[in-house]
Image 1 (tube, rainbow, N blue to C red):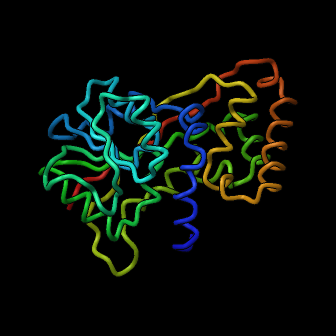
Image 2 (tube, one colour; image 1 turned 90 degrees about the vertical axis):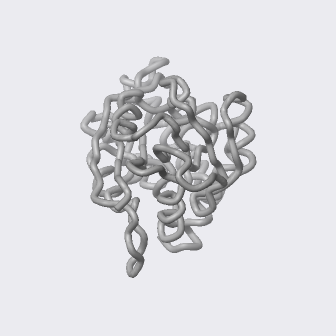
Image 3 (cartoon, rainbow, N blue to C red; image 1 turned 30 degrees about the vertical axis):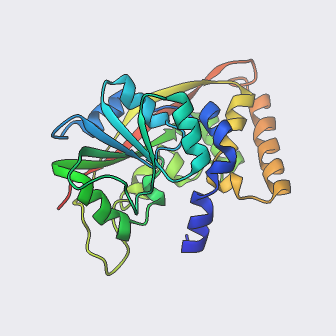
Length: 259
C-alpha cells in the first residue's frame, strides 16, 4: 500500500468512531495474557487505542494501562467508555511518554498502520529493559464453511488477508519491521492465536464490517453495494438468518522484543 493510501486508510476511522465503539469486538483475554507473558512489569501502553476495545480487556485483567490515540473522535469515545483510564492524544510516531516508562506496548488492530521506521525507535524508547511489543488482531475462522463463503462475498476491503485465520500470520509477520534500508529495532516474532467469538445479528455484523478502513474509504455507492451484498448473504444462510449467532473468531498475537 502506498504511503498516501495508507494515510487515508488509517485516518478514516474517526468518522465512524461511534459505530466502531458499538460494534467492534474486544480481544480474547488469553491472547492478552500471552502477549504480556514476558513483560517485566504491569505497566502497559495501548498504542493506537482507538475507542478502547483492547484497553477495556487490559483493565479487566487488572493491568495498569495508559492509552494513546491520535484521532480526537476515537479518543472521545475511549474516554467516555473508560473514564478512569489515563488517555492521551498522540501517535506511534510521537508517543507522549517519557523514556523507559512502560513494560509493554500493545496495539490492537493498529500495528500495521504504524510507520515503523519512526515508530520503532519511539516504541523502543518508552519500553523498559526487557519490555515487549505485541500486535493483536481479531480474525475470522475461515475453516468454517459459512465464514469462508462470507469472506468471498465480502471482498478484501471488508475481510482481507489480515482478517482471516488462514493468512493473518503471513500478513502480519513483518508488521514490526521498518522499510528497506532502516535498521530493525525488534527481533524475530512469535505468533499465536486464541479462540474468541462474538454474538452477532445480521445487522450488527454488517455494521461491524462497515467500520473496516477499506469500506470506510469506498465511494458511497460502492460501499452501499458491498454492505448490501453482505447483508443479503447473511440473510440467506441458515447459520445467521435466524437472529443471534456466534461469529467464529480468534485473536491472533504477534510478540517481539527489542534487539
